[in-house]
Image 1 (cartoon, helix red, strand yellow):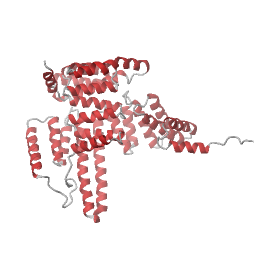
Image 2 (tube, helix red, strand yellow):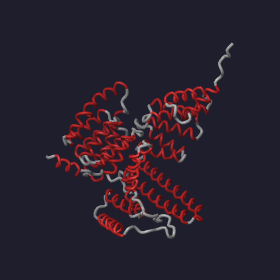
Image 3 (tube, one colour):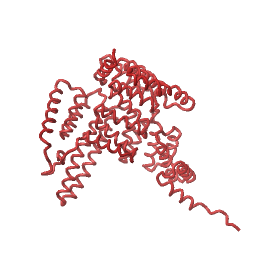
Image 4 (cartoon, rainbow, N blue to C red):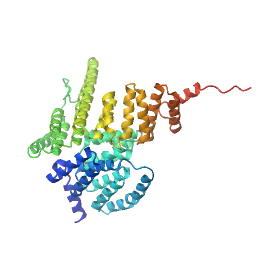
Length: 477
């Protein structure tokens, strides 16, 4: 088979788990159940067999990455890590790129699957696997692989950039915009990143020429779009609605929901996505991202309306501010409830529990967040961060005695990501030690942080206060 023919064949088999043949659907379900039951090796074997037949199944790709991670017991350490790096060096630097350059993408993809067995926690392996998946046209599988990469390396700009690009190719503009926002946070001074974020945000929710007033209408605030553009969008939406009567797959529903969002028919988009997510046995990760994006788009429209109202009618500024605050609260409530529903629907999915816990921490819901961090700590690659989260929850409720050992366990487990993530755990531990009267330990931690990064938070001021409080030496005679 020629290279173009091979590419077409691989791209043609991109399917969701629900679109697989019944036999492979059963294989996928058995693998998911095995992973939930802690039988990661069995799950990995089943998923590897499935992917051999359907290499473009995105859900299976992601599940295989997570199964390999769980089966390995976490990132290799010591001599095992050195050996893994040595085995990966030549294939990642020479063999793999050469196969891709020669157009032998199917061989490159098989090589990436083999490398995943060597070290499933390797950032470079995950990036290479995503690159190979994208090369054969499986952009959705590439995006799911990169979701695992950013989960393992939350402070890595390369992983977030790759995820943003692949989500755009996989027609997931909302997630692409979120990835660009995270990338902009990691690279605050990069002008190109800021421009990419602007374009991604515009693609997720097309810019409005005026405030629409769809959600919270204000008299006189709504304006019609240009006739030609509106007609084209109406025609696309009508065709998608007609097509939905023959094809009600999740992908078709998501496409129609995106058209509803572009037409600012937010209620229709929300209702459609909620209806699809209610289907039993559905992997709803992408749908949940779309629904969260629809909630945000709906809120942005309402916020813009009330901002315009305050500008045009200054006497209504106080009313507009109250309405804007209410809209933000409702948006956050709906997104948080969506994540709660997902965690309840997938009780054995550690990743969902961890992501929900982080959202709950941002809302100050310490007790509930603690429960979800506890559920996530069983995952070897989330253990350290979950323990740190548990420590912060205890500290947030004033239980500093319980927080200190949790922070210590997080440090012992090896908090991953940038140095500042580890320093943040040390800093929180220092505060808790100080609260329970363990001043010597708190001061030692602050000095350790200062030695590694003098600019971290307020450690420089704390060091100065420690120096000022230190007893003076013996006076000279």
